[in-house]
Every structure is written in C-alpha cells, then in structure tokens.
Length: 67
Image (cartoon, rainbow, N blue to C red; front, side, top):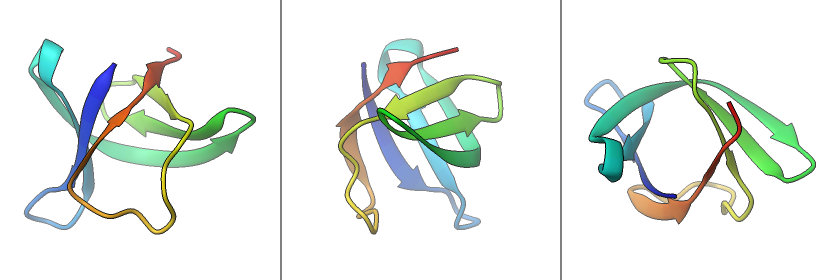
C-alpha cells in the first residue's frame, strides 16, 4: 500500500495511509530481513523495503502491513 511519511508539528515521524484516512505516530523502528519495520501508535506494523537513510521527508513510499 502507498503511505506518506512526514513529521508532525512536534517533530515526530508519522505515517499517513490515504485509503484508510489514517495518520498515526511511529512509536518504534526496528530492522528485519525485508527492511525497516515501523510500529504505529495504533498497533499496526508496517514493513518498508526501500527506505533511504537518512529519511527525506515528506515522501510517499510503498509499505506492507505485517500485523
């Protein structure tokens, strides 16, 4: 699914999912075999396979929901 990564007014990383009209703060970032995994405040875990380091925000990227 396509998601947008950006910073909120407090400087925290957030993920916006347009199809669900959902915007949540990233509370945890981990590495996996498939790339980076972001855990959102609502409990979702999204895996990103092609994120640049360091992140350039805002940007739209492809993510896969793993839980």
